[in-house]
Length: 145
Image (cartoon, rainbow, N blue to C red; front, top):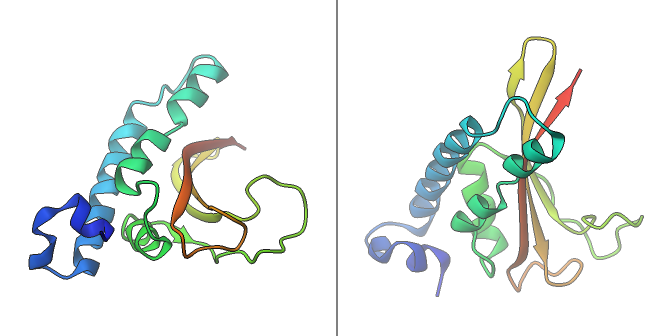
C-alpha cells in the first residue's frame, strides 16, 4: 500500500503528490513546535536528548516508505535533499550510504550560534533505494561560532 493511502484514507480523492506535500508542510509545523521545547541551556546530554527528533520524523516517514515519497515530504518541509549515494562509497563513516536532508541555518542567534535540522534515511543495503527506508535519524544540531 502506498504511503499516502496508509496515512490518509481519503488520499484516493486527491493526487498522491499533493498528499505528500501536505504531510511535508505538517512535518515542518511539528519541527517548529519541537524546536521550541529544546532547552537553550543545561547539560550537553539534556540538550542532545531534546535535539533528537527521530520520534517525530518516523511519524511522517515510517520505516518501509519509498525513498521517492520520503524525499517529496522532506522537500515540502523545507529540506534540501542530497543525492542518493551509490553502493561503493569510500571511507568508514556509518552513514555514508544514507540520503541526507538538511535545513541549514534553521535558526541563528546573532553571531553566536546556528542550528541546522538533519534527517538521514538509510537503505536496507548500500545503494538499494528500491526496498524502502530501513532506518531514519533526525536531529537539531547547534554549532557555536
